[in-house]
Image 1 (cartoon, one colour):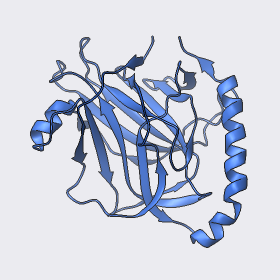
Image 2 (tube, rainbow, N blue to C red):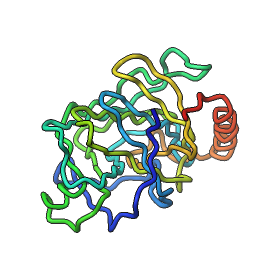
Image 3 (cartoon, rainbow, N blue to C red):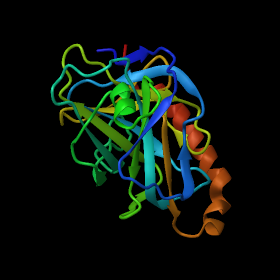
Length: 242
């Protein structure tokens, strides 16, 4: 099953807010600048995960907002009840090929109705587009996360003719991610997969750094180099998806 698809250029990017207000906070991670021209398509019931490292050597933070982009050329889904569920995991589970799997859940959005980007544009009176940014406002109850966590996303209810994927960007402008991705088939266990291009979701995180940045940034350079070496090794070891 090949989930990677080349996508057509979008007219623009619309925006959907999970709540009415988005609180400005310090940047933690940003991979929204360089669109690769590809998207990673969902399969019913599969959770797809992107493992993320905060920028600036930040070891932990309270996440107040995060977002990611989806892509579909459909005007509407054929499936009558397409839903999405979003998770933030700590990577402290049973290792797969030597790498700790997503396990402890720090955030669970619960199931919510998913629309196509064109439907979101109509609902919110925005310019028509094949891409939409889903924004989650956690400012009323910030989520504590340590660096090197996984953003997991699951879609259900897709008809056989429905296609929707995660827009892929990279390299990250702030922070790091791995070129592979986690996948879990309906609770069947996590595996690491790769594709022809790095599968880094177009995501952004903001929040409150804990503890104070003046303490954290002392080790920023060393942490970045160490993570970079880990990324190179993991690209070599990860399971290859054709």
